[in-house]
Image 1 (cartoon, rainbow, N blue to C red):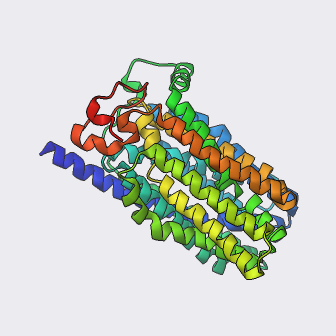
Image 2: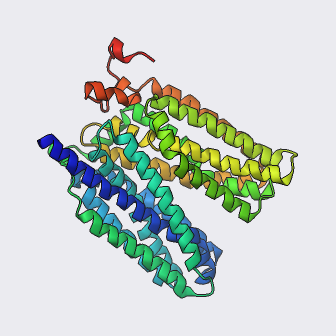
Image 3: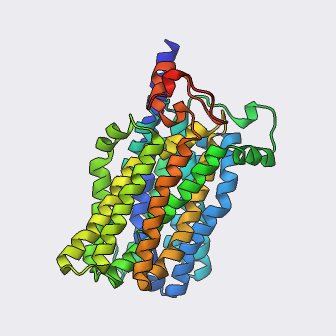
Length: 436
């Protein structure tokens, strides 16, 4: 009976967590696409300040994430999430009211820091409220709701804004702040199952916990792989790849919007069909397959900009590139995040999630800086470079697979054993776990 009650409590908590993911994504989708226009044109602060605002988002995330993991481990994911939501709400409201460059940058720092901490906090809550059997599906649902929320938020926000009226943007940011505060109310009612924390164990220094993490070779390899994943895909969406499409392929802004919509549509439509496929496949081979799919996507992009077909064919190839990226993303969502959780030793999921989020932010900061100029002017080298990065994903994923235990690479085995090997080096598997 106690096990049934615990399962029901975990299910109730998970439903609120998914509502939280949808609301936070909806709020961000409301404003993020329009930040540049708002700062540069509506507030009249110029393109330099607008560029700095976008940079501040990344810098704020890089500053707070190393501390976020430690806070989650020591205090728990829910209190850290609530603090992040309040910070993000203040930042969003500040952006809507700010009229000077200093005020805009300060508000952007608060919003960026809060948004960054939400990611590992929510991910750790999903880990605490799921089992090895349900974790992949839970993270797939999270990714699905995030993309749906971003898409719906961006669509509605685009109909509300008016570049001739500051008040329309103030309303937009006020709604975003309200979403975060509503999420505070929703999440404050969550009854989290008791998860192990670092404070429950003998005191360990921050230096010691980092040393332990860096000693986990599988996690280090996953972080390297994660950097390449985010650098070669997510870091190119709105920078290098869009610049390449416009400059090399002559893609119109409306076609670029169609390509972005195709990416989101592919994720929303394919997510749960893909989930059924990947649930019974080795995680390392699923990630390796994503590298091959993305390599095909870069070949399609190469045809769009470097081929000699018609403009319609080039546009179709370019839209297909974004759709193929979406298919790869749908395969990664139930694979990578649960793997981070399974690599984390008992009580350390928060720190591992934060480290992986930090790797993601680094890739998203470096990706546009490298890909943007290349995509705009070095068209053939740009395609070849990121085609090779995609193939590198396949190689890195297969190498990672050799370091994973049978349970980490094939989590469905936990259904029979009910034991998941967490952290550390791979144990010697018995004959029943080594079959391909």
